[in-house]
Amino acid sequence: MDNGYVVGWGTLALINAGLAQGKNRSGLMWFLLSLLLGPIATFILVVLDKLAEEGSGRDD
Image (cartoon, rainbow, N blue to C red; front, side):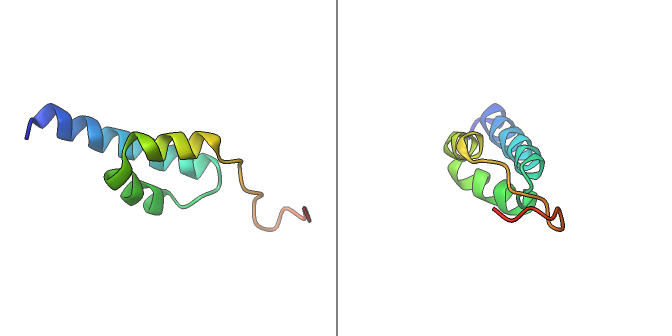
């Protein structure tokens, strides 16, 4: 397997983890999911809405 491919896939997983945390989701779970799904996980994260923060007092 080409090293560039592995580095790119791992970088995408790290980016997805940061994106997930920015949307109040589990960074670790999305990192692991991204290792399996790659760009599909990125698309899912972009489409998902941001979760309300715990203790924010919002009842939706």
